[in-house]
Length: 274
Ligand SMILES: [Zn+2]
Image 1 (cartoon, rainbow, N blue to C red):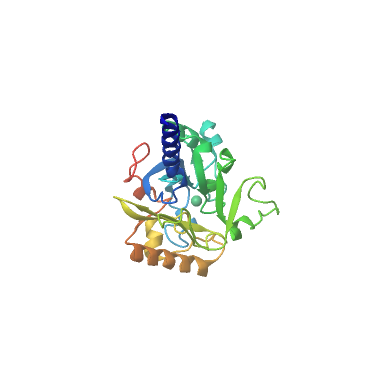
Image 2 (image 1 turned 90 degrees about the vertical axis):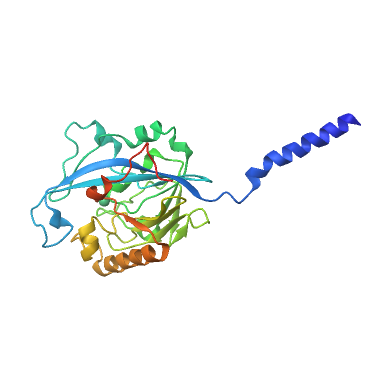
């Protein structure tokens, strides 16, 4: 009789301990880390602001953002390739493109936080320029969320921008990543055909929009300027308006990835926003 009771109690305990795994209610983001994913210097900022500040150099930041959600880790953008960290002079830019240095690798910054590549459940890239997709293949098991229009956009030589073997979900528009509204990818084409931006909602910090390269720095935002290298000017202007609409609807702050002046005022990993 007593044995049977114990067995029942054990079964009940097992059922109860299995509950959290079954529950579908793990919601919310609790931490966001800003990782240094490259430091750039452009020789001529009018590359991004046609006719304005011609010939003036500009320092640019390049961030990755590591976000902890109750259902797992999410990585937004991957920066310039970690291999650049080993180049004493960094990587020289062609023409007016920025030159890049990498004071710290992405992997070393994850390691400092005790996060292994296999721990990252989802990753998303704003677009496929080299300062954003430099380290996608450091996470060969991580589900990549990218707009289909970006994935299918061939390189000038016709080659694919991603390794076909990498797990991928090709999006056609917006995606609420964890289903609770806390991490939402939204389409902002124009810089490239399938560019996307990210809305993140933190409990204390509030809502943030992470731009990707929908805009490069605040002056361009304030004046709605479109860089000459963008694939579609009208789309770019419409996407900036879309971001402005998100900012007012969600009472969100705008964090511009390449704006070093803004970025220098923000907390850097291992500090975090919650
Ligand atoms: Zn960029």
